[in-house]
Length: 418
Image (cartoon, rainbow, N blue to C red; front, side):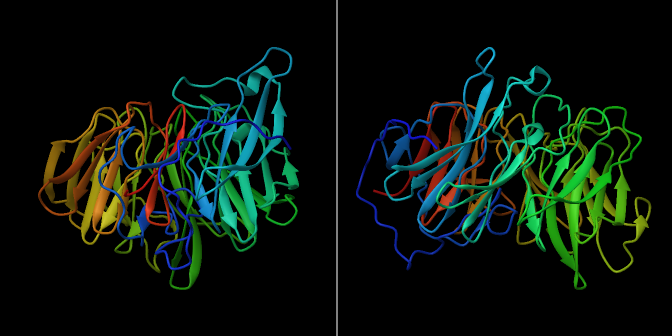
C-alpha cells in the first residue's frame, strides 16, 4: 500500500450528512445501474473556477467512474508503462468531503506486452469498481480482478482467466447472488465469467457463440428480474444473452449479425431491453422480455430497431415513457420508448463517449472535451445550462450526496453548489 501527494483545490468545507438524499453510488451508472439518481439539488452550473468543492490529480491514467459509499470515493488508475517493470494497477480511496487520499493500493503489476496493448481512447483502468457492504470489487479486464476491504487491504485476487483484449478492457463487473460477473469478450474465444465474490474462485464460465467475424466487445452486464427470475443481460459481438446467475445457463438470446465492439450498457424499462449493437453501424434495439422469452427470440421479441443516431459508446437513458440517446457525434435524441416515435434529434455537444445521467428532474451529459449540458426531459429539447471544464473526459458522471463527481484525463472533480 502506498500514499501519494495530490493536488487539492478545496472550496467550501463540506461535511457529509446522513440526511443527504443519496449516500451511495455503488457501481457503473449508479444504484439502479441505469443512470438514475434520487439526489436533489445537484448543481447545474460549473467551471474550473466555479462550484468546485475539490479537485485532485491522481498519479496515473484511468477512465473508470468513481463509486461512493459511507463518505468515501473509490476509483482505479494505472501508472504509466515503464520498460521491464510494466504498469501498476491501483485502487484508491478518497474522503468524500475533502478529497483527501485515505489509501492507495497497488492491486496488480502487469508486464506482459500482449496485455498492454490499448486503444488511444482507452486506459488500463477503465472498468468501474463495484461496492458491496465493506468490500470493493475491482476489475482490470485482461489483467485480473480483485476484492479489497474498505481499508485498502486486498482480500483476494484472480488472474485465472487471462485473455488477449483488443484495444484494452472496458466493461465493468456486476454482483448478483454471491457472484461477480464480467464479460471477457476477447478477439478469440469470448466468454462470460463468474467468480465467487468471497473467494475469487471460478463459479462458472460461458463461452459466447455468434456469427460475428470480430469477436471483441466491451459492454457491462445488467441484472434484471422477470417474473421472479433474475437474469444477467450480457451483450457481446453479434449476440445479447440472458443468463441465469446461478450456473450461467442461457435463458434467451437475440442475434444481430456483425455488430461488434459493443460498449453501451443495456437498460431495462417498460418490460424491454434497450441496447446498441456496436460497430460498424450501430442499431438501437428494443427487445421484449416476458415469460415466453426462451431460447432464440430474435424473430419473436424484437419490438423495434433503429439505425439513426444510435450511440457506439454512451449508454442510453429512459425517463418516464421517453428513451434518450446521445450519439458519439454529440447529437441528442428523444423518442417514445415503446413505439420508437421520434420527438427530436438535435445537436447538443461535441464528440461524446460518456453515458447519460438523470437526477432531480434533469438530464446531464458531458462530451470528450469536458463540455457539458443539462437539459429537461421531455418531447422538445430544453437546455437548462451548458458548462466547460476544458479537460478531456471519457468517464461517466457519478453522484456524491447532492454533488457531481466528474473524472477527466487529469483530475477528479467534486462539483457542488456554492
